[in-house]
Image (cartoon, rainbow, N blue to C red):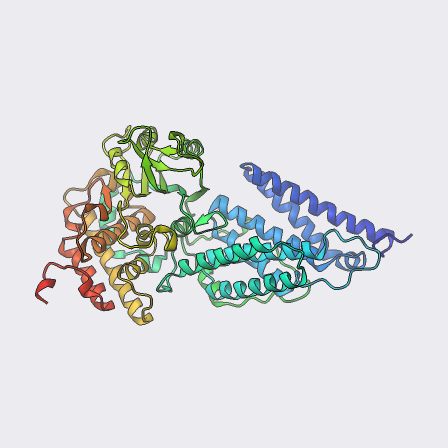
Length: 553
């Protein structure tokens, strides 16, 4: 007997089996997103989608005869991409991000979400064409995010063009549909990605590139300070409460998150290769973490990116992270938010919620004191960052390292336009420097030369700090970690650039670091000023700074 979809009864059973596998996998995915799933639960989730994917590959002819639509295949492939992306968020393992790109690229190349042809007569569609269009729009949003995180700039530009064209077409074909929010989202994403590219469009990655960021000359000096207790960055908690965001990532957390990852060799190769998945039903293998290990690099520190958390939520996450820190682990806490006075005017704190202006929305420096029983590396980007220097000397056994932003911005535009300049210096220092001096374009050769000068300068600063006759024990413990060491040397450059910029500015325009670094790397020191001078001369902005002998030139 024929079924309503136009196929035989056996074919209908095949289709129902496929739908049941997909729905079971979707149910597991929803449960995993709603809870902190354990490793074995995540593996079961991967296995559930792998079973559904293999089933449709092996029974494709039967499923198509039963009425399977191409968008249904694309929907499963897109969801598998989501699963890989979610796994990347949990583990910070870039291999999962690469696998998400594979599935998303296959969906695009094979046209799974192309406009649907006339439906099979008599078959009831699970979704209308409009519903499929919304699925396609969501697919493009997810694909753009993955491509941006992998720094695939040409692919991002192509996806934005396709996304715009699909949205324009959808508004014409489905005038009854509400596409206003999609139009706004596309505009927000375009603005976000333009800010990510910055005024320079530096070709280098935000991630830690050993060939560029590791300086062999400092190895012997680092070994000298590793005689005591050495810490490694084990986990990072990132929270930004400024706008200009994309999928719960602000510009600041987008940049900081990538700067705490290694740049694997396969990502460099992937950026130069074109992968062809245009075949109709070629097999795409699903991989789990055990199949994707990179033996050449240590694992990335885990990251927890919080989108506008409440104060109790943030404190709970910090407490959980401190509870699981190993004996040689350090927790990095990055918070970017505006400040204000609490119940007492002199009691300054970070405003972590826009819902009412009550004392429950404020995170005070004293709230973090209990967590100084564990090693902390704290970055505060706020107009009241100075309040957090009170944590220096108030610890409960583990003196934290504090990187505190200027209280006032050197630029007229607020942090929402391009992200925080302070955070940009910590993640992409040359891009921040060009933004600081108002450069919107720079020759690639000049840019490369400036990058080389800066890299050589940071290598020199590492040697100076590690060989200093007096080095605070807090630094001796964290400098061996490459991510934390790079943050400290980039802070030195940031402080120098802001401090030497011409104009009448007081200390509120300067960042602070606690404990204090050796005077040999102060902004006025010859080792630091000479690097800033060389960069300024190479780019042609020497007169924007007040060097010690600049008045005579």
